[in-house]
Length: 202
Image (cartoon, rainbow, N blue to C red):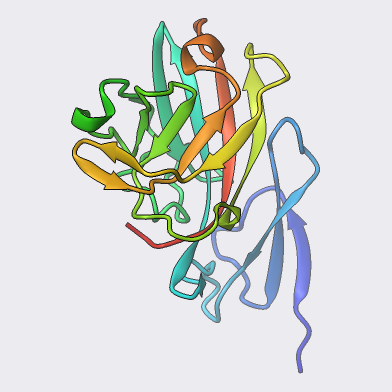
C-alpha cells in the first residue's frame, strides 16, 4: 500500500498531484491558521462528487453586505472569492458576483441568485434549495469574517417550512441574532458565513 503525501498550501495547485492530500490554508479572520482538506482523484482533479446517501458535499461562503445602502449577497468558493463554489450545488443559480438580495413578500417574491431575506422575519436568510428533509445538523455554519456588525453576531440553521414565490418547502435558511436591516445598516457592513454539510443538488 502506497503512502500519500500531505502538504500544507495557501492555494490548491493548478495541476494537483493525485498522490497528495492538500491542506489548503483557510483565510478567514477568525480562524486564520486552520486548513481545509482537499483530496484529488487519480487524474489530480479534486473530488467534487462525494456523497452520503445521494446527498452531495456542500461547502461554500455566503457573504451578506451593505453596498451603498443596498443589501447584496454572493456565494463563492472557500478558497477563492472571485470564483463560484464547486460545492454549492444545493443552491439554485448561485453566483460569486454580488446581487441585490430581495426582501419582498415571501409568497410572491422569487429568489435572486439563490437567496432572499424573509419578509416574515428579516433576520432569516433563505437559500433556494430543494426540501431539506434531514435534521438541521446536516449543516454547520461558521462566521469567518465580519466588519462593522459587532462581535456578537450568531448564526443558526433553520429548515422550517416556508412559502417562497408560491412554492412551499423546507428551504435551508440561516437565522441571524438580529434583523438584516439592523446588522447591515451602514455602507460597508458585511458578514461572511462558511456553510458546510450535505444536501441534494438542485
